[in-house]
Image 1 (cartoon, one colour):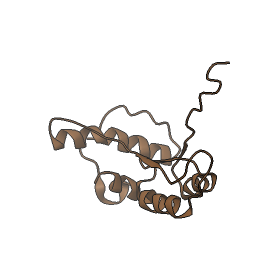
Image 2: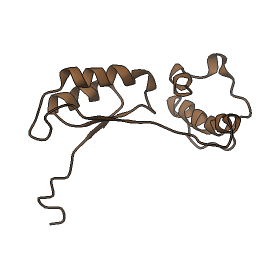
Image 3: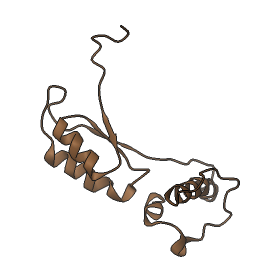
Image 4: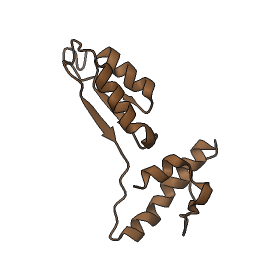
Length: 122
């Protein structure tokens, strides 16, 4: 059987406080998907660390953070490229088809962008 006895590391990937709590209770490494819930990042990591129970797999808390990165030659170009991700996120939250046909030339910041998207722009 492929991989038999390999002891492949098992991680819990999550984007909620519940996933942080579960990883801590199970004594597993935790990967937080902050690109889905950037406003919960610090609270989830603090909860994971404070509630961690050592296990056969792991003696002390071990975490990583998953983030989106947009790179371009200029900040203006990077912000323009980032609008595709913003549109996809808003559509996902609204239950609409995710595909983006074009980037927004200017993102209407006031009131249209969910708080979590504003946080992810920092």
